[in-house]
Image (cartoon, rainbow, N blue to C red):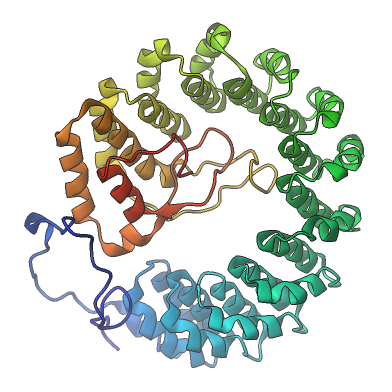
Amino acid sequence: MTGVPKVDAAGSSAPGPRRPPGRHRPAAARRAPGPPEPPDPLVAQITDPDPRIRRRAIQALAERDDARYRTLFEAAASDPDVGVRAGVAGALGRLARAESREPLGGLLEDPDARVRAAAAFAFSRIPDRSILPRLVARLDDRSAEVRYAATLALGHFADPSTRSALTDRLRDVHDRVRREAVLALDRLGGDTLVEEIRPYLRDPAPRVRIAAAVVLGRRQDSTSVPYLAERLAKAPLWERPAIAVALGRIGDPRAVPALLAAAQDPNPSIRVCAIHALGTMRAPEAGPTARAALADPAWSVRGAAALALGIVGGPEDLGRLGPLLRDPHPWPRRGAVYALGTLDLTETTPEIRERLRDDDPEVRLAAVWVAGRWADDGARSRLLALLRDARPRPVRSAPTLARGEGAVRLASDADERLFGALIMALGAIAQRVGDEGIVGHLRELYGTLPDAALDAPVRAPAPLGPGGPPVPLRELFERVLAGDDGEAGDVC
């Protein structure tokens, strides 16, 4: 093997998805034929006698996320080395092509648990329900890692036919499996869900208790409020952020005293989540608590306080939020930008434009979101400059302080969000001022992007937490080019 198979992005000779009418790639963007590419040495290494070299080649090729290598990966699924087979399963999962279900199905029956687990994980990314019976069978696998991977994959499918099998996993001896079963059942929903999950607030394993708190918070289970409020003061440190976030999502006033106490906790992480929760539930006490926390010595608390004021504050907070735009740490600056934008304090427009040049990507992202919300034509040139350097990037899940919707993010995923945010912001400006030049620029950019990039999910920024489900970049472009910029943050 000395080259890459000449197949399309779907891994076959079938034509790819057609572009909508009027959205064809301009002639200038079509690549002229050039000299043949030299053989890729990594492709040859897949058949190297040394299994270590084969493993590294599979991993390196997988990181390219190129569907042209699918047939090579599938051919390596019968490799005698366990590490190679596990790498093949991971590589096929990254490509997420339904055509790979048969070789992956074979790996799901592999004699080695590591390979079976990797195959189950891979199926979480391939929306082919014909594999459900085989995943359900893996729920009884002798390996806890395989049971965990199968539970996670079935949670992604959220198919009602798997409810009984997933409910059985709530009694699994391994806590990782029980936790994933709690989260998988949450995706299924149902009238009896909260009654099924509530007992697991008392599970012996912290990770299961945290998952149960997340689910009951998302489901706004007011019955669990007294117990959660009591646990907020007594639970181990690593559980308390999830409990605070859950109480905020439930929004029951009975939780306010416990959250106010947590807002004064010695640990900054607890203060962050308590302030976040008070703001989320719009408690009357949230405003005074957040204003006092703007001077907190911990940067994470100052950032949370600014975001909370974006929900419960008002024009009277302009003098408090403005100075945070010059905070030495980027997180309070980010919070202040989002808060000023959410409160529509447009007198700070020059300062927000300046934040488009901030050294920190999260602050720049926040400023892009505000420029789109306000449809600020004065920010156009800077937004276009940012768009020239931005690239569509695959969505990752940014680490959070407490898992679940509404959780407070700790690590930046601004690079993944920026491209979609810029498209939305420029679309909002074009719609407001009726500028066909911006629309033409966006349409030309749309025509130059490959199908793989257009079909990939993207996120735009949202003021609080990781936001909702991502959407395909193609859909985002179509909405913007059709003049539908939507509500600020509705794509997040």
